[in-house]
Amino acid sequence: MAEPARQLPFDLVGKRVFVAGHRGLVGSALVRRLERENCVLLTIGHRELDLRRQEPVERWMKMVRPEVVFLAAATVGGILDNSMRPVDFLYDNLMIETNVIAAAYTLGVAKVLFLGSSCIYPRLAPQPMTESVLLTGPLEPTNEPYSIAKIAGIKLCQAYRRQHGARFISAMPTNLYGPNDNFDLASSHVLPALIRKTHEAKLAGLSSMVVWGTGKPRREFLHVDDLADALVFLMCNYEGEEHVNVGTGRDVSIAELTSIIQRAVGFDGAIEYDTSKPDGTPRKLLDVTRLTALGWKATIPLDAGIGQTYSWFVEHQATARRS
Ligand code: GFB
Image (cartoon, rainbow, N blue to C red; front, top):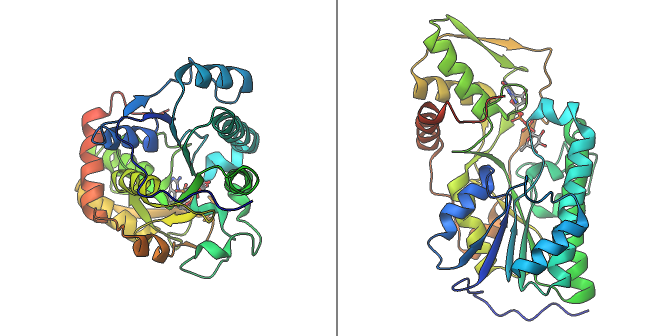
């Protein structure tokens, strides 16, 4: 079937916009960003609606009739959490994306943006990774179930475009950080984990702190407010079946990241590398040429973003997710 009509820019003003996963890191940033778009926000908590269950999802979406969907709901976690809960990362994510995307099509939702992750790409993909390296090699074993679920989501959006002409698009963000992140040391990603560890080491007057792995892997970090801005930009200005990378185009080693966080927190203790923990993918850096050519660029520098996130953590420690 032919590509759907490309009426761009796609206007959000006055539209009923469902942000699935609005309490998470990405969803909450999207809600903050969409408040500037004069649209009608639709949200629901996971206690009220389990997105893994098809019939309640169909019923709720039929009732609220969204015209636009940002699919930011997902089971997510850091390297260890991915290894410990392969069923949750595969099953939950397959169910959530299948239910929401299928219901969006059935109900005639005008446009859907599905969110993946840079871990969809092969473990040893050439760096920086262009969108075209998808499915060209084996995945990183520590997050293979999550990656497979996210690849399925991209393919489902493409399939709806091809078979039914639906305007379903996908964005692949790099590693994210910011307010409302998970600060639990067992299940979080590296950046919030190191903020908390550094802060607690400083308060306890310790002379060192533990960092997992060798410190050599390289990662690219994007502030979630930049991501939310990019997602609104893509929703309004992108129409294509290829997914679009969203990142800064710059990466740092975990050792460099630790130094930046230590400076922000004001702790200069030694670093002990716990090499019993996995390094994961040696390097993950996105090629953001496609997004830059469309007209969007990240604006929040890493040190400023980390400073802001640290302040948020200190202020919200009591309520931030810590276990
Ligand atoms: O952020 P992270 O958990 O996930 O770990 P990935 C990144 C790197 O930081 C790894 C090291 O090399 C970790 O060993 N690291 C050092 C730490 N100290 C810590 C710590 O205290 N906590 C954590 N968590 N890491 C995830 C995927 O991979 O990236 C997900 O598992 C998802 O599926 C996400 O794609 C974006 O970047 O390795």
